[in-house]
Amino acid sequence: MQGYSAGLFTPKVGEGHISIWPWHYSAVIQGTWAFTLQASALWYGYLDNTSSTQNDQLDYKVYLDIGTYSLAFVGIRNTNRAILTFLIDTVSIGTIDLYGALSYAYLYPQITNIAITTRGIKTLSVKAATRNASATAWYTGLEAISLYRTA
Amino acid sequence: MAQGLTNLTQTDIGEGTILIFPWAYSSITQGTWALSVTTTYIHNYIYYNSSNAIGDQIDYKLILSAGDYTIALYGYQAATLGAVNLSLDSVIFGTIDFYGAEAHGAWNVGFNVLTTGIHTLSVTTKLGHGGNNNVFAYFFLIRRIK
Picture 1 (tube, rainbow over the protein chains, first blue to last red):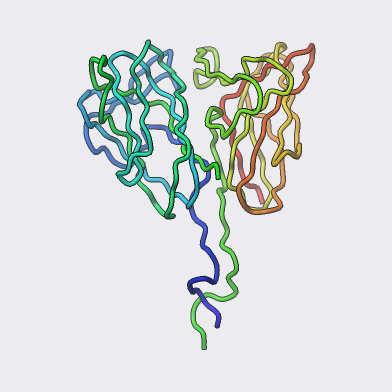
Picture 2: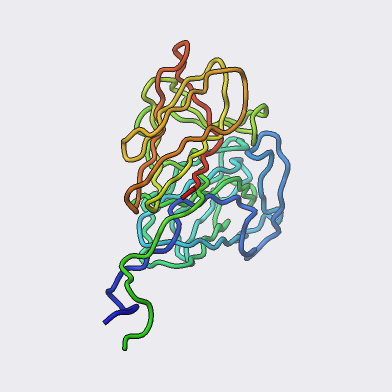
């Protein structure tokens, strides 16, 4: 028998290397987000939650196959910045603490070994869910997000 | 009579155009690679091997279907810069020399992918003019051309 049936082949979907400019979001879940000019940032500016409120959140749609992924992030680092929680379909895949000495283009350590167990369109969320005990506000400061398959 | 699609063995995968920010690597095989904001460069930054040594290498994982591609390395040319070998799964397919009069632009190299799947693109510094080993990059763009 011919035709499309289970087991005939394994459909492959998704993208292996996804580069996201943060202002290309699919939804603003919470907060007011605006592009801010800054001569010392990538692209001469960054996307910030001017609302500076806990749980400010942006969503991005990504198309992923089953596999293992890493996430790279460049953004602002300062004492008034939150801890970013990255989620896929509402499940946390890791956090990045933006608190620290001021840098307008800080390359943070990658989040690695992100396991995707089902293929399809996923929602990648960036959320200011928590903050360092010493942080003075809930600002973020997003410049570049990369999600890419490693295995 | 059977209905539906016939003769299906494998769907095609991969991407036709891939933008790679250079810091989104899968591994650093050698050297120290750094992001630096510099207002004199396109996009306000450079990414480079601050270790400035021959053999400095950074690797990227890509999902590619079998086919013909072009990789464009957007970067910087200067009399202080070196050269790189580009390789796919450890096989060198091209060399770019960044030595020359100061210029910003794209250097294009073609390559062929024989098997569909996950591949490793490597950028490895080699001895350039005047003993220079630094290379600067803004981003890579891979395009399928056939």
